[in-house]
Every structure is written in structure tokens, then in C-alpha cells.
Length: 227
Image (tube, rainbow, N blue to C red; front, side, top):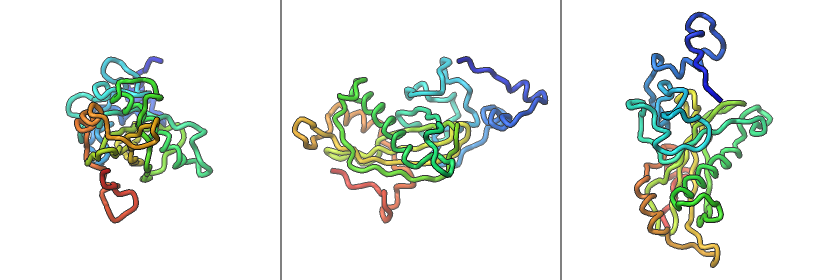
């Protein structure tokens, strides 16, 4: 579906409720981000990624990078957008807390399958030991979220931690942060196993610091010691 730039019409005086949203995409309206979890400043984001790619669905690190100067923090290795649908809402008309775990699963599987060089989920040799999500702001119907995933320091021998962050695609506002402890698993013997060397090499390349939400070791959800 082509994207039509309606900003000239809005600036000519035909303002609508969408005007403020479209203004967020305008380079003239660019603002700096103080959010430690937001890797880029969406105020300078263009309607299309380089090459004319859609903003919906999984993207490679290269495709997800805005023009130079847009980032306020390093990019994470895998990202995609998520549309908030009616079925995702709870009785308070907010995005239900449990839905984030499905979003995290999608990010995790896409990222790990890329590490394994496969597109078949049956090739996944991992199992989840723990999953945690911290909810920072409510999200409503028809919003678009920008989700990211990265491995966090330190790596264990048989396990590693993946961290996630979700922000509104049209603003720099972070709405949730997640974490999963992932165990390398041999399903044939039903036992954990060392992280494969090729996977470990790529995880080490992509390592990031754990988000601030999980930095307090005195609270639930703090990083577990490596195994």
C-alpha cells in the first residue's frame, strides 16, 4: 500500500487530529530523546525506511537504521513493529499485559532463527527458564509499537538472557521492557547443553547492557547469575 505524504495539505491549513501525529515524523519537529530505552529519535523518522520498505513486520539491523544522526543510543540487533488489535485489549481498553509475552516470543524466535541460519521453528534448540515484563505506560487500540530484542551481559555456559524494549512507533515514549532467561536445550535427551559455538559468537557480538528496569538486584526480575 503506497504511503501518501499529506503534510503539505496540513501545513496549508487543513489541519486534522492526525496533524500532531504527522508532525512527529517531520524533520523540522525533531527533538532529542532522553529515554534510555529508546534507541532512536522517532521525531526524525521518515514514513519509509531506506529502500522504500514498509514499517510493518521484521526488519534487518541495516533496514531499521534511520538516516545518520537519528540515533540517541546504539541499535539493538533485531526489531519489528507490532500493531495493537482489538483482540489485544483488556476490559480497561488497554493493551493486555499478557500480549507482550507473545510479542517477545516473536522477537526471540525471529532473532534466534537468524542466529541459527534457519527459517524453520523446529530448528530452535532453546527453552525458556523465566520470562519477565515491566509495564511502564498504557497502550491503546490501533497504536503501533516498535519492539526490539538483544542478548544482555553476561553470557552463561548453557544459558543467556534476552532483553526487550517496546516504544510507541510515532514517539520516543517507551511503554514496556521485558527479559527472558533462555537455556540451550537438547530435546532428544531432554537436557540442557552448551550454547553452540557459532551462536555464542554472534551473541557476543550483539551483547548490550541490561535495561535500567532490570538493573536493581534487590527487586524481582533482576538478572540471574549465568549458568
